[in-house]
Image 1 (cartoon, rainbow, N blue to C red):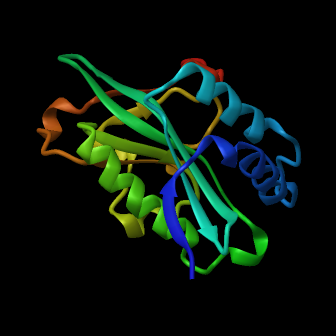
Image 2 (cartoon, rainbow, N blue to C red):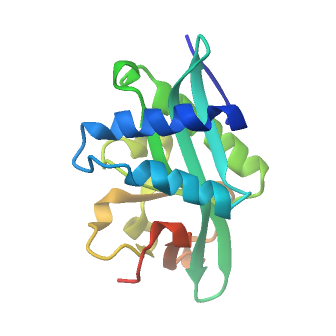
Length: 177
């Protein structure tokens, strides 16, 4: 079994190693995700960083950073998940699910109106996430297909007032599309 908890300062090296290992077998194959985590930690004290731990070893990590939904009427504060990493031997054992579930609870308690994520189209809907474009929201990642971007509202929001643009924090280096 494993437990989910908030990252502690002593976890940072293990998180970096985990992230590099988890993304090694992907198309990314570089340290970009680990570098992104470091940059977000420095820039945003409101980031939520969670770890999954088994027998003292970090086996999973989820970072969420501040995000904004800019509509014609308002700017709505929320969080964006990413990156999320699980050691290969622990994948498909509900570690990622547990990290996401805990993030949703914490984000809501902190007063965030939504959580957004870019990810696999068949994975995130099971947690209640909806495709951004289904609720009239555009993302700011140039060249990325819409079907990979999701949002879950944590508070009741009038759907006629959600039309707008999801903006990730500057550390993601995104440009409007």
